Image (cartoon, rainbow, N blue to C red; front, side, top):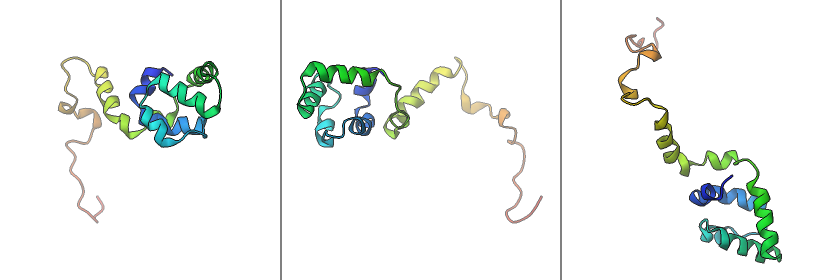
Length: 115
């Protein structure tokens, strides 16, 4: 994981941070708003460790994979939708061609009647 991604999506990562460090207070973590130095200082104070130890613990946590619950958090939907536009070739309008779905010219059967 990269800290810049965590900082940009701080509210999505807050539950994961609280799972990793349950002694932290949710309101305090939210107030940090992604500032890495403030988080390290808060973590070291909460654990009664020196900041270097807290920084090493954070670095170990950052070495892991990005958690699925943070990736799928609804607050990140707009960014994922915007990023998906990079997969569309230049000049293509996705809503113009529905032939690949195969049922555009097929009538729906009336409700409660078998076809």
